[in-house]
Image (cartoon, rainbow, N blue to C red; front, side, top):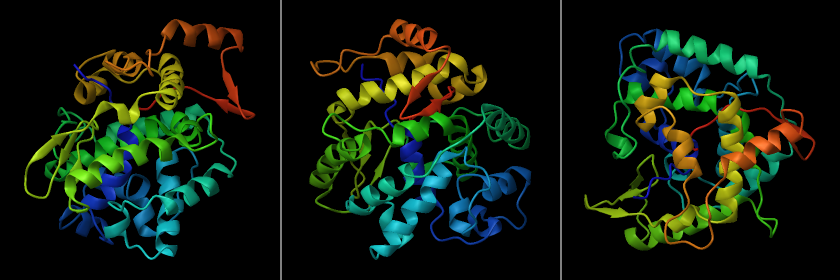
Length: 305
């Protein structure tokens, strides 16, 4: 059974703006007379902050800050929000990654914990129900989508920065390599139509005519996936996700690590990720891992990461 969670955070990054296309206020976004506490928290500090034009004061939520850079690059290329979220053009994305990865990144894990605790308090109801990663994201309850998307963005802020800037042995960004493969399949199956959606587990393509296609697993197999999984696994080991929330999102405690560790079936490129190797690496480096001079704190993802 193909179980990889792939790049859930990244997929959320494209889905959330798509779901709330071009809305300017909290009330418009959630179709509410007055936003409740959770909606205000998500709108002001979470997944939608880049739509308001207000740059987050914290560097910890990588995806939120990265969205600002991405949106700027796609605007320069002539795209609107309604277009860039489903655009097959990866050139502005490459430019955004060059810019974002050149910015110094600092984040204290204690700040992540504070953000998460506030979100779990303000959005207790929205985060209490199971979240279906296999569904068409356009059919999901917008309140749950925003709450869980913000939770994953906060939780995976530190490792997601490292993952966003990873490169393959050719010096290319891993995300560009992987999404080039994914988009080749999607564009072929949809005949270039951009009115499509991808499930948040990265397994199903929802086509304009209502039909679905299983997405080949090889788009996220190989060297890049192994690097991405190791970053997330290292972080999860030190900062486990709340068990109830992990159950709501991934189906049970420990499921996230199991899926990240799984090898690509029928693939000679990916032999899986060894958790023992991760633990040895941590001990040998004094409890932390450094890459390009940056401290890799740990706590993940997921989903995407």
